[in-house]
Length: 167
Image 1 (cartoon, one colour):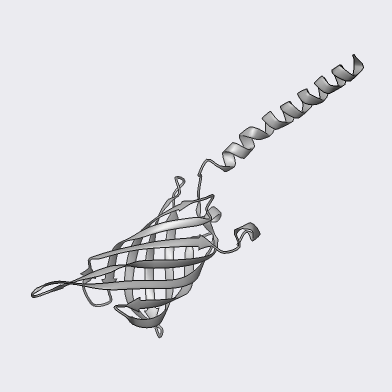
Image 2: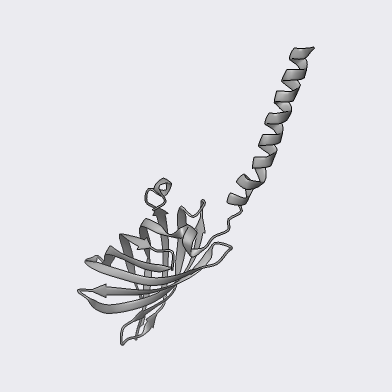
């Protein structure tokens, strides 16, 4: 009898402990995001197409890049990338200001530099998922400095580097 009471008491304590932890665990998985939760070091690729209007129609140019960036808790981004534009490769630096919403969507205003000179700007729509360890994005606009806004279809996939370290 004493053994049954002890087992029942232990089971009740374990069950109560588990139930008291359940709301905490669920709150961490509700997808609530902020600039703080997405801050860290990231690696990314982007691929897509530039659509260049010409007098005789539209020319498509394939683009791709691979790079890394650091995003701080204030939404400031800085990084580097190697980009291929129609097969021509170049090294670039990137800065941006990212605004993250509680629903894990975000907007970023990007500046891209070659040899220290601003060459283009872009606006991206982003979404963070996998507990802020991954993001996907699409270019909403791409504008050349002193030039036109080009129609583009470019998507981005990024993953946090060493997410368990909090970076």
